[in-house]
Length: 151
Image 1 (cartoon, one colour):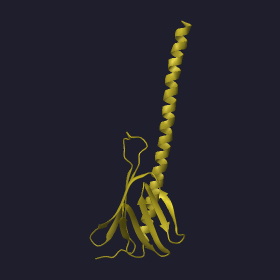
Image 2 (image 1 turned 180 degrees about the horizontal axis):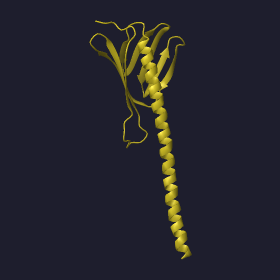
Image 3 (image 1 turned 30 degrees about the vertical axis):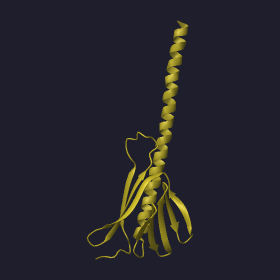
Image 4 (image 1 turned 30 degrees about the horizontal axis):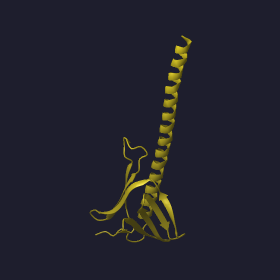
């Protein structure tokens, strides 16, 4: 009887250990996802603030799969570059291109002509950690340039 109890205890401890480490991994993935979402929201709000503070027309260029958004500002030009799963931001004040957001699956910035103004929309999708994610981390940010020309 003692061997049966020891065997049962070993099975219960094995399942408990497996469940503990699975929960541990899920907790780390959740923390990583929450951090990615917070960084994406911060980047989106900074992008919106930069576009709203534009002193002239905002220009979008796309060459060889590298998308760049040029935003004229009072202190120079701000350039957002999207390529290779990263979003980079370069401010002409310090001339250093910084990785603003990593872990990017897709990023598309586009102008959206509306009645009297040109709005800008940024659609962002982050990479998922798990292949069987329930929800895709999609974000859409919209704003109107400060130096927008009305028709």
